[in-house]
Image (cartoon, rainbow, N blue to C red; front, side, top):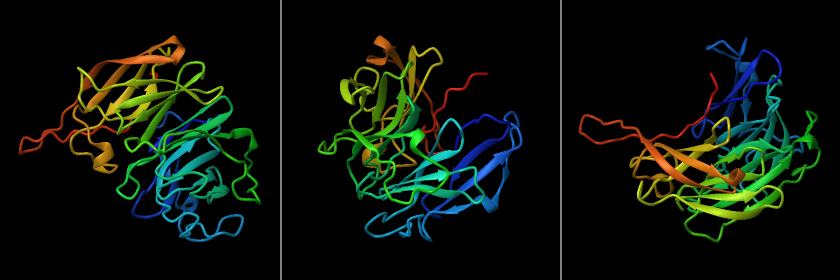
Length: 302
């Protein structure tokens, strides 16, 4: 579940029903401080059946072969949600409409599959694609899309506005981009690579890689960094580190040896950093097997 607080009192929450039923469901709470939300069935958007605003099939063997939603990434206005698709492609959705509606569409050749990381910064939505399935073993792409170019009026032409391919490492057989975060000030984008056990640091001004933070070492021989978030003052970053029995993603990409929270020191405004500590978690079953496998992560101010 991923939420985003807009300017009013309503707090829309997008719930992806995931890989079994290819739908996107919207729930809303009456006030940002209320812990409960009322599900709105009328807001449901079917991602697999029907046509897009340009008349193309939503799910199509060539354009978008597998529309199971991976992650809905909500912008700061809570209006636009960027829904990454398992088989490749992307839908940008007006998540405040009832029912929700697609306002921009992208095929698998334009935006590759299995993207999960996404963050807003500098007037752009930054998203990635990954290789977390057996059918797509390795993938590492980072894209940006200009937020001001989107409208609640559906685009009449597909792939509009055009995304920018910021960086790609698809030739690397040991790469799986996943979680992302912008460092304080937005100068650098950190992208977690689960298979490569590293964080790739990209300068947002020009899309150049300026560092790779190698995480395997004395603290963990296979940390498998997943999702990322930043401390309020920007001095630390946090990463979920996967376990030996991953509950999501293909095991070749998602298996780690030290389940818990990785604590990274951010240096030079985010240009570099290092893994300083791991807060381990455990979930030992009745057979004595530790099945801990953290995934979601969000820093919240209280």
